[in-house]
Length: 66
Image (tube, rainbow, N blue to C red; front, side, top):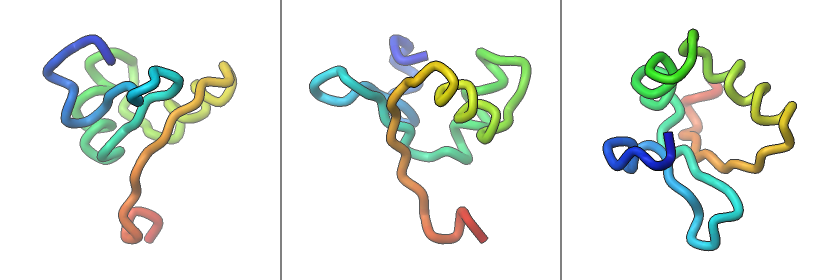
Protein backbone atom coordinates (compact mmCIF):
# COMPACT_ATOMS: atom_id res chain seq x y z
CA UNK A 1 0.00 0.00 0.00
CA UNK A 2 2.71 2.45 1.02
CA UNK A 3 4.95 1.63 -1.92
CA UNK A 4 2.25 2.31 -4.52
CA UNK A 5 2.76 5.85 -5.85
CA UNK A 6 -0.93 6.18 -6.73
CA UNK A 7 -1.80 6.03 -3.01
CA UNK A 8 0.44 8.95 -1.95
CA UNK A 9 -2.44 11.41 -1.64
CA UNK A 10 -4.13 9.14 0.94
CA UNK A 11 -1.26 7.43 2.81
CA UNK A 12 2.48 7.91 3.19
CA UNK A 13 5.41 7.18 5.49
CA UNK A 14 6.57 9.86 7.92
CA UNK A 15 9.84 11.58 7.04
CA UNK A 16 11.76 9.40 9.51
CA UNK A 17 9.95 6.22 8.39
CA UNK A 18 8.79 5.30 11.90
CA UNK A 19 5.06 5.60 11.22
CA UNK A 20 2.65 6.28 8.41
CA UNK A 21 -0.11 8.81 7.93
CA UNK A 22 -3.58 8.35 6.50
CA UNK A 23 -4.71 11.75 5.23
CA UNK A 24 -8.37 11.02 4.55
CA UNK A 25 -9.77 7.96 6.30
CA UNK A 26 -13.08 8.11 4.40
CA UNK A 27 -11.40 8.04 0.98
CA UNK A 28 -8.81 5.55 2.20
CA UNK A 29 -11.63 3.22 3.30
CA UNK A 30 -13.51 3.67 0.06
CA UNK A 31 -10.60 3.33 -2.37
CA UNK A 32 -7.63 1.62 -0.74
CA UNK A 33 -9.05 -0.89 1.73
CA UNK A 34 -11.16 -2.87 -0.78
CA UNK A 35 -8.14 -3.06 -3.09
CA UNK A 36 -5.95 -4.76 -0.48
CA UNK A 37 -8.38 -6.31 2.02
CA UNK A 38 -11.70 -8.13 1.99
CA UNK A 39 -13.42 -5.17 3.60
CA UNK A 40 -13.66 -1.39 3.49
CA UNK A 41 -14.17 -0.93 7.21
CA UNK A 42 -11.90 1.73 8.74
CA UNK A 43 -12.50 0.49 12.30
CA UNK A 44 -11.45 -3.05 11.38
CA UNK A 45 -8.32 -1.73 9.71
CA UNK A 46 -7.39 0.28 12.82
CA UNK A 47 -8.08 -2.74 15.03
CA UNK A 48 -5.74 -4.85 12.89
CA UNK A 49 -3.02 -2.21 13.19
CA UNK A 50 -3.45 -1.97 16.95
CA UNK A 51 -3.26 -5.74 17.35
CA UNK A 52 0.12 -5.64 15.61
CA UNK A 53 1.30 -2.56 17.56
CA UNK A 54 1.74 -0.53 14.37
CA UNK A 55 1.93 3.23 14.81
CA UNK A 56 -0.05 5.41 12.45
CA UNK A 57 -1.50 8.90 12.40
CA UNK A 58 -4.61 10.07 10.65
CA UNK A 59 -6.18 13.47 10.34
CA UNK A 60 -9.87 13.66 11.04
CA UNK A 61 -12.20 16.53 10.44
CA UNK A 62 -14.51 17.26 13.39
CA UNK A 63 -17.48 16.08 11.31
CA UNK A 64 -15.99 12.57 11.09
CA UNK A 65 -17.18 11.70 14.59
CA UNK A 66 -20.71 13.05 14.06
